[in-house]
Amino acid sequence: MKKYNLRVTPRQINEQDFPHDGNSAKKLQFLLRYAILAPSSHNTQPWKFSPGEDEIQVFIDRTRWLKVADTDQRELHISVGCALENLLIAAEHFGYGHQVTYFPEPANKELVATVKLKSQGQPTLFRDPVLFEAILNRQTNRKVYEERPIPQDDLQYLQNCCVEGGIWLHMTDDLETRRKVDELIIRGDTIQFSDPAFREELGYWIGQGVFGAPWLIAKIGQLAVTYMNMSKGQAKKDSEILMSAPILAAISSEVNDRESQVKVGQVFERVCLVAATLGIRVHPMSQILEISELKAEVAKLIPKPDMVPQHTFRLGYAELEKEYTPRRPLEEVLVR
Image (cartoon, rainbow, N blue to C red):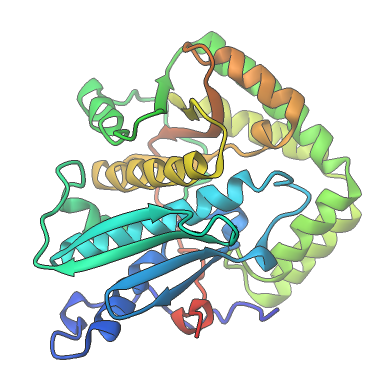
């Protein structure tokens, strides 16, 4: 697998470069420059695309699946859902209507969605035009957050991002809930970082430069994570980060299937983009759903029965991260 080339800058996109005079396939391929800026678990970017004349096929890339951390491929499909949402937002910005068919070929489980696109289409009411600009600015923020609360109007704006049937976004500032989640974070870090296979997998991806560190620093980080048990130190750090956040959030689904997980990714990306427009930072808390017994505890904290927690994250205010995480160039994710 190729390492990230940190000199490649897929974020340097100018919408004025849209190929208005090009053929349909080139126009659709341009939309994918925005899709690949989506967040993903460990920044693995586990997606592939096949653009045609009037449709784009969206695939998962199993070579980038976190087999230890994400055993059930939940995060894999959520990540692809984030990229799909960016694609639809970009399509609407450039005047395309779209129709999404999820898992159109049951025998082909890698084909997540087929997006039919038609020029001069109508935008959807729940995708605010400001989301397009936010695609370039969105970033995951792992810092300790400020203690100031998020205004209720902004929380409602975020809540409005969840429009899919069977998907539910729950946000809370309840201190007792935060304390319970903090306990789960500590347990999760202890379990995961005590597992040599988990440390090896995480170390591998750090070594690939997924978090944007220069090569040598990335390799040192890879060796440290792989060969040292960091559970106590990591748990303390994660606890401090978690308890600083004024809001904890979870996106859940009524049905625990692949289509729901992809839609959860779409909702999460919408939340991330709206948050970026409001100056609110977002940081996923993956470990509490990657361990089955902890996931069951998270489900008990969601005040709606029979919902399956799919994605958990924190919201708040902090200084911007200094750098954006790197992205693979578009050419690497195209299916020829």
